[in-house]
Image 1 (cartoon, rainbow, N blue to C red):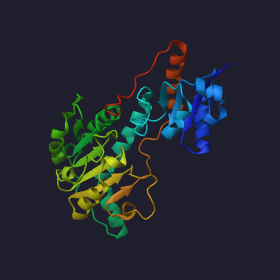
Image 2 (cartoon, one colour):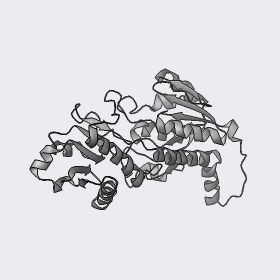
Image 3 (tube, rainbow, N blue to C red):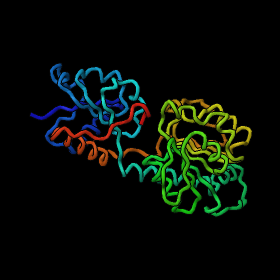
Image 4 (cartoon, rainbow, N blue to C red):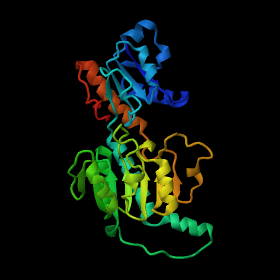
Length: 313
C-alpha cells in the first residue's frame, strides 16, 4: 500500500494539481494527495508533508507531523508559527540559483545600460545617446550571500562589475569583496552604484533598509529587490526616489502581493514593477529534489538539513 504524503498549499486548484502530479511522478510508490483526500486515520499517521506557502494552521490537521518540505526557497511564513519540534526544510535547487542569477544580472544590466532613461526618452520622443561607463567602473552590492546570493555575485563578477557581498556573517567568494555584520552595511551602501537585495526575510532583516539605512546609499544609486518586500521600507524608498537620492528601483517583490491596484509604485516614474518573476521555481527539478529527500527518509529515516529557527533560514 502506498504511503500518503499530503501536499499542503495556498495555491489555486490547478497549479496545486500540477505540483501533485509532478511530485507523484518523481516519487513512485507514494501517494501525493490533497489534505482533504485523507481520512482521519491517514491524517493521524502523517509524519511528513510537502508544502507550498501554506496557511500554517492547515498543518494542525496532522498531529504526528515531524517535518515539512517546502517546494520553494522562502519559508518565512512557517518559521516561528509552527511547533518548534517540526523541522522545516526549504528547497535548495541549483536550477533556482541559475535562474535567480539570470534575473539579477538582467535587472542590473537594465540599470547599468540606462534603459529606464532611454524608455523615458522614448516616451518624450527624444533621440539622445547617453554616456555609458564600463562595467568595471560600476560597483554592485549583493546583500545576502547565501546560495542564491553567491551564485548571483559570481555572475555579476563574470560580466566585469566590481562586486561587494554583504551578509549577517562574512562569506568568502573568489573575486568578491565581502563584509559581515550590520555595522559594515552603511559602508557597503556608500560604495555601491546598484544595491541588489537577496536576503531572507527574518526578524533581523524586516525593515533593514529603512530611512536611516537608505541615507547611507551613494547619491543617485539604484536598488534591485528580488528577495522579499518587507526588507525595504517602501515609504522610505519612495521618499528617497522623490528627492533624487536614489535614481531608480527595480522591484520584483512587495509587502502585499499581488501589488494592489492604485498603489503609487505602479505609476512612479522611477520604479520598475515586476510580478515576482525573478526566479520562478522549476517544478520538475524541484520535484526531483523533494522526492529524493522523501525517498531517503522513507528508506532509512535520513532527514535533510533543516531551517535554523533562531536565524529564520
